Length: 117
Image (cartoon, rainbow, N blue to C red; front, top):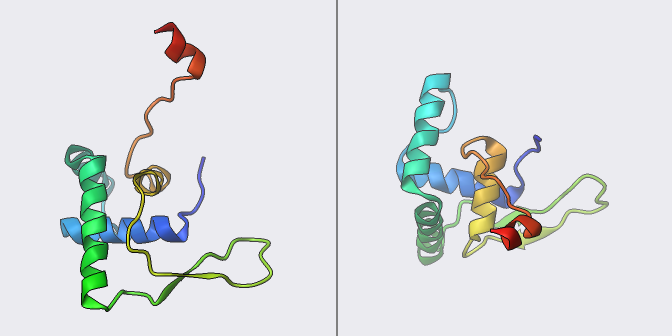
């Protein structure tokens, strides 16, 4: 299922690629596969740490890339702005990587299957 990344997910991806010194655009399919493998090797928790470290740097410098983040969604009648975040959750980073195709989704076990194991 495809959906475009939400604003915080887009920010997460920007910070991930900034932290590892890579560009996420204009690559061959083989380069994308190598990038997916590299991100998988780094690990989700380490990426979470890198993203929040970058956010802390922006906070200390007082110069965030954006003054606020727009939370507009289809059907909204007015724009909503949130201040630039100081942290981003692990789940938001996981969703950003999953929905952008930079992480393969892991299988989800049902509660019933967990009880049988």
